[in-house]
Image 1 (spheres, helix red, strand yellow):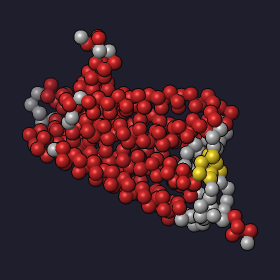
Image 2 (cartoon, one colour):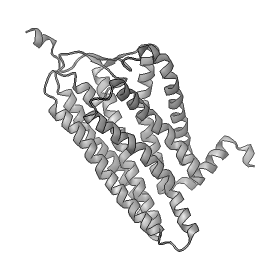
Image 3 (tube, helix red, strand yellow):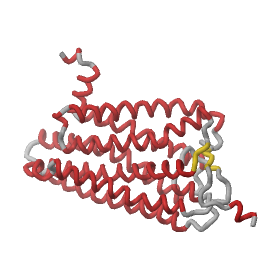
Image 4 (cartoon, one colour):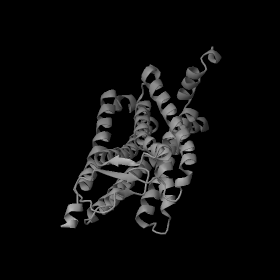
Length: 315
């Protein structure tokens, strides 16, 4: 009877520990995270503002970029403010509905980012391999359909995770040794078989990453084939330069994502502290770097940012 009394399918709340073993340094660790978060907010905010108000940026590539900036804002805002609350205010308590909400938006924005990068690869393929059909294929109506498909796929993939967690009974500790709620971390607190959670949480991200990466790889193989058949060296360099920022963002997103998935599944000898620090860096650094990369490497955005920040110097 005691076990039944302690079991609950709706535990009132959980306690987020932060970074286990580094509690005494939480105040100091919070400073760089706060700085990175401000950079992410400012960079992505400026990108969204410029793309919204400047009609010369109303092109397919920049619509995809605005989606990426929005997804990055969702990703970092889902986790970083709560993490700072833990570090600075000792606000470790999170309700079960709040935990499910954070879990949903964390994984949703991850799948959203992956799908957007695939969409951007298709955009670059059309621009370089089929330039005469670019505007006729990627019409505003088509872009809207692609965006709806991207959001729909991400929502459909992650919604089952919420129900997989919600169905679990919790009769053990309510303490989560992390700075935010993530699927397997919460599921491991349950007093029931979580095999479905483990395999869904591993197989779905891996299949999604692999399928998106394969399609991105095919796009860039076709792009390179087209580029190296261009008649002049200048034309080749110009074509490759338009892909440079996208390739950098792909590497920043997928390299740590693959590493994180594999270490969570197989890296049993890696310390929990490293896992948690790496996970926190992953939700903070890419959203801060992406707008900087596009601002530096994309001339249209670079010129608009300079004009926005230093209007007198451009006159």
